[in-house]
Length: 163
Image 1 (cartoon, rainbow, N blue to C red):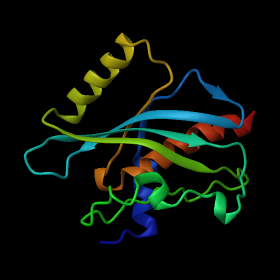
Image 2: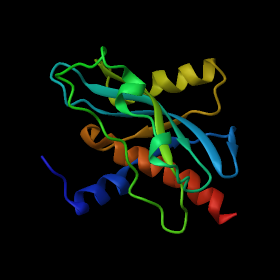
Image 3: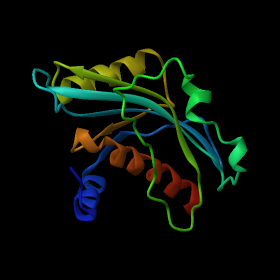
């Protein structure tokens, strides 16, 4: 199933950024932890919560091929599940803002709570932990949550580059 550029733009535009990081942003380099919530695509669940952390470098970093880690380097040859097809994380790009993004942590949970209940619980958890670095995002389409994550990254970069 593919998605058209128009559908991508709709998801990007209708993503709601509920909470942005207020600390931990250093000009040009970010560690952006996030919680992305949306309606579940899995039967028997009301919502999906994706928790992760994105690293954004100050500018494009061009590395020789032999410095890029291979799949085996990351997961080991013995720990490969043959049924796993894979997941690609990519950013469409930000005009005049060359950055490199990588995703270091990803946790996906299907919840019985509604999106509103999951949002309230997530905000309460962040408040209890006094976490001011984690962003909270509502995606209009959980299947394409990465587009909403890109919107989150773009909002942080827009603020940085407009200074």
